[in-house]
Image 1 (cartoon, rainbow, N blue to C red):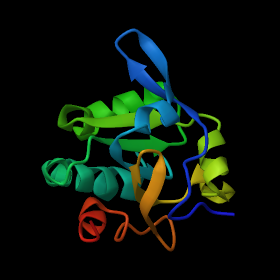
Image 2 (image 1 turned 90 degrees about the vertical axis):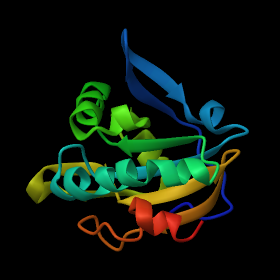
Image 3 (image 1 turned 60 degrees about the vertical axis):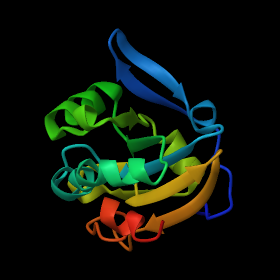
Length: 162
């Protein structure tokens, strides 16, 4: 069952590539008492994720800041080395977006947002969505109808509802 507005985020430890290598990120601690935007993508360097989804949040970062968002996080079912490199290449890291890996899809599955498309090598990947989380509770959630779309979950789509 998918998570919905009003639900608390599931307990999760994600990974981030820090200066000294991979670092665990406790999502509950990171969202406690804060307003954050989390967007999830099927995979780093994949077409729509790379060319549309991440750029939409790089473009709109200042607008989210103006609305009181403390942090924007991007989650993909990849290891922290991939998400770290992807953040550098897309300019997301320089824009202040935190790139997080969910290497074995634990968070994605706990959210009820996993899907697989074995014909293109995507196993237990994340559906495409974006949400606003306030003090660990989901207050706004936009899920795309299919992972090839990036409309309601794009930065502009989420901003329109805030």
